[in-house]
Length: 120
Image 1 (cartoon, rainbow, N blue to C red):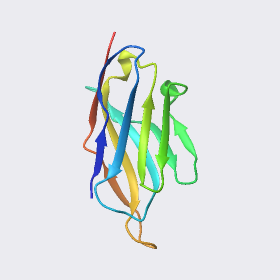
Image 2 (cartoon, rainbow, N blue to C red):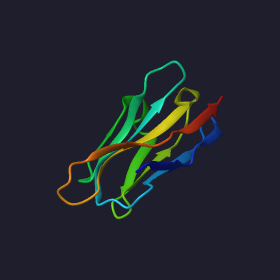
Image 3 (cartoon, one colour):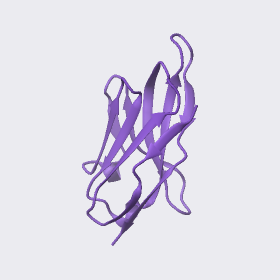
Image 4 (tube, rainbow, N blue to C red):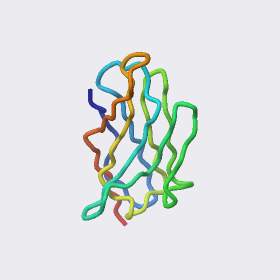
């Protein structure tokens, strides 16, 4: 199974984007979903994480600007990016721990990445 992402693009500083991510196949649940990003020459870093219980965590440099949300019925996760800065330019990757059937262990999955470019 793959995670299918959409919503990247190019915006000016201060602009907004909304990223979406869904599994390519039907799954039972996704207890852990997150967004990571990787800028050129840098390591991949966690941006935001959401658990099925509703707990969310954010990287310090996106707090107050980015919002992660999820649709548990669709096992989908979203990332609203507001007040974007040039430093937010990166490829954004969706991550999920997917459970295909009840009582099965979770399987890690990644999206193909979507480019976000912010110009000053």
